[in-house]
Image (cartoon, rainbow, N blue to C red; front, side):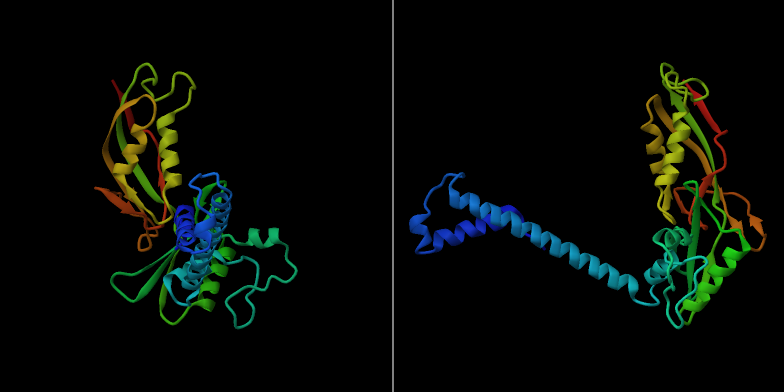
Length: 280
């Protein structure tokens, strides 16, 4: 672990003071003494170097951990490295990019989000994936893309069961009551100065900030709303979510969220903002 500049500098000064030769010549207590300034410069350089070493070790350890074949973290790494329209090098788990440009390679990486978890009731890995269009998370609906992604995981996977979750977002239904500052917000939630809808924008921002396959905490959602200028208080009357049920071939019946919820698809989409009421 990198030492601080102070730790290194104090060590140097202690060594000087304990040296029979240096302690005779270098006796000034002034912080501007040449030898003190010189040792401070050296201490700064050493501390920066040690910080670089720490970062290097961290990056190497992380890379090794994520590259251990068959681990959940490895599957996540491999999901994000998928390249649509490219073929794997024979008997390898990486793609043959040939003469492709950096732009072409980057554009081919259509899986933008991935999360891998172990099933709780059987020996199986659950791989959730999603793409992105216009800054909005989305599932893969083009048959050619789905076919290529499925074939890719079949080619690289280790023995064992995996399930790829490529679903539309879990629907999120919110019923909110906002106590508003009448000087700032109208009875429809519009800001009287800027003519925007800050509560709606705050909710949209909150969903963007939520990590893929992250835990949606209702308390955090309310905290976000309560920070909006013009909001005196906020109460979440109810929150429900519905997700894709393969057995039904569509969304199931909305279920209540009591405290928190991780999306089955990995991400949520607020259905509408019609159930936000503003009171005084």
